[in-house]
Picture: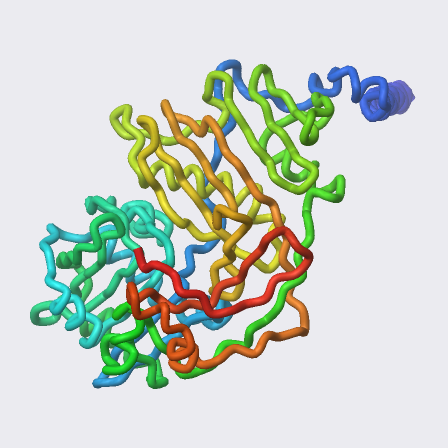
Length: 429
């Protein structure tokens, strides 16, 4: 009898505790408490003085173009992210291993570079200037890449004997380089290459007529792209989009005030401005909110790109719809780094507004101190634009011959509600 009474008393105490917790939770959800900032007391807090971690990049790195050469014929793929993901699933790990375990480099002549493209191997074009050591990390290489510089075009080519060589074109000076890897042709490269069926793709330098019109490194595929049109919207027009953005940037949605161009959110003296058109700008008063990894007290271009990409994927990557982000460039700026990203639709770059880029980050003194994000959401429609084959488009654009530019499919977004693809002559640098 005594045990039964004790059990009843224990149950009452548990019920009272649950009711108390429930009442406290409901109280924190009222406008009075939300606006006062007291609700923050019930949220998990980071240790004093410790910055918000950025984390690792979440998006998959995907080349804009891929070509495989085998038995005197070539397979080429571009302007199709779905098929690119399937193809890159086989070749991406090989490239990651080659980058992470690359040996000492030496220069190549342009003739030798073209010879690499015409031998058994795989060509990757990432359409932007990517720090080589960052690319190695993003592709999951197990070793530590010791190569310097940035590259847009990279090749896994047949080396001496049974070896595989890594070749690339430096994004800064345009020079060509190669180095040995630990991969073997018979175990790694040949089986992957043999699984691909050639489709007649070629480079402009392999065609007498096109080599007079286009940049010689232009990849030409015979299949005409679909030319999908996209509807464009502002993801921050809805409250849910703003809440998602603020959560990822670790800003309190309650601590804000109207500004001349939009809402201003504060974290101490740090300012985040969300403009009505979807542009977001951030300026750090002292730095430290978005730390960047360093080695021996130094932040390299690769580490700057790594942290900027992680923050871009966390914010823009969740709001851009059918688009995906790609790294455009990493440049030195005022003792730090300026990192830029763009949007890509089905493998084609989006030239946004007057600048062309979608996001810009400034990295100084071990953290991201400033950034600008142009937030746009792209949704594929059933409408298509008729596109000419590249050889016919090249003939119709005689200005190409002045500088032998690349001819690529590009989207132009000037802030309207839709975008359509078209052929554009762009510099290959």
